[in-house]
Image (cartoon, rainbow, N blue to C red; front, side, top):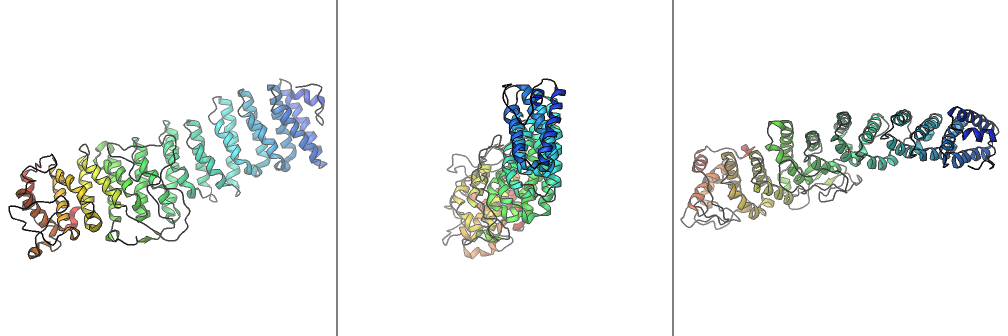
Length: 562
């Protein structure tokens, strides 16, 4: 610094003291600056006030000399104290040089910067809120500072800022969300703790509705839930729990569709806590949002079905997944078989497209536990859209659902309970949406025939029920069924022929399904498929005690498949 340079209205003694290496001398200079600025305030001399702040900023706080920077910081804090309530008029000029010092290599300087900013914010109070984002950004970096003194100073400033936000009704949440969405993906545990603590504060403020912006931070919250630190995981659990409470209280204002695929992704993670939490959220979403979740059925099934085969080590996840599966199945109704306009639901959000892609974010979980099926079915996150209509159509994307079911049934490594659940789904779909399902019979029929050789008796019985339902489906019947019991009877891969109208008594509900199951087993016994030539390169080795069981079992109601 040039000693001959004129720093008026700062006196030479003030300048010399500000550059001193001793804190006490710099403190004396700060008191002189405070007195000087008070005089300017009394005189309403804004030009001189600006000149003092500019000099302290450019010539001292941003100087190359470390002691000058320290003097500039304490001088700017003194200006703020002298200005009092008028400091809000000069906050930009006061705050920016201090925040620059947050990045200083000298830990003592970073500490003094925290101290200076604390004094500036303490005086300005609510007037600092227009500058909240830059303050938050700086604090989020200091939260991970390696120096304990700097971290301690930043925590004091952080608490002060939280008090100001809590007591004010002028907080700009809309402007803050993009910064929060960016910072929430930090991998530093202290930065994560800082982020979670702020979300907890914002959730607790009645005038701030963070639920509207939950789709933008939910993925990041699940990332933090997987942190190695127990305290951070616990804090994140609390935050997610608070959000879920709000969702249950105000389901009509929740953007379920925008969060569905976020849950699908995290329901497939290998972390037990994340998976269980995401599955619990999915259960609540299906029960609260109802048919709004139908477009995401293929993704949900991709996540849920493998969990049904979990052992007792993951009993909690298995139980919640089973509830999700049953609740989702109940959403499919005969209305979904109608070829025309889809039925609307009373939900203020536009129809989601489950094929929309998820923006790339660092550390996003993917892949499913214990399942080899492609988790991309319906796993894209929908583009955020405004609630522009009162009633939105909801469409059941049957192609994606059948693809997922076919995939899981074809996977020989998949658990027995999952295979049974898949067959129950197929049976349910053939009952509720027979016309639309008939288009998929060609692709499903070979794997259904292969499943007849499954080692599990229960799987085979469920498989037979599905085959019988295909045979009894009005969409699959033909005008010329031929002679079902003749020696030349063949079972087509595209349809199962049923007895002629002369035997229509066999088709009377509710006994039709099991009657046809008996009939089909008998036909299979007489056919080339049951004799060992399926045309698929795999012998059909269905145990005789299974077929005997089906033929001898009493007739039952079609709805007992569940």
